[in-house]
Image (cartoon, rainbow, N blue to C red; front, side, top):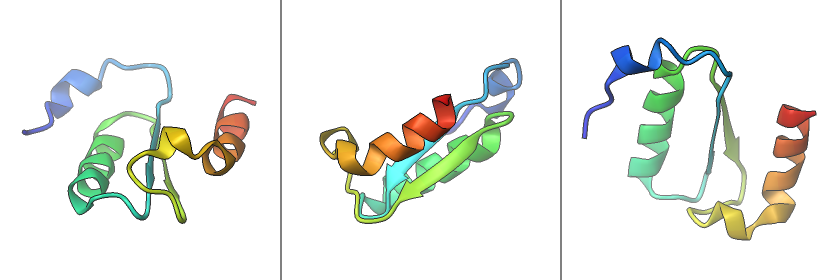
Length: 69
């Protein structure tokens, strides 16, 4: 699947793109490309987190609090 980078140019809300460093390589590659394509994106790679990051709130919460705070 290809990113449609031109579609992202209109996004005005700074996005947060998150993945764990233990997730599948294709997810890491996709998130890197997505963060590069989204204007103002912040990418976070969480050490020790896998692809089920929502089940690991102790790793995710500090980054969400910082981003939304």
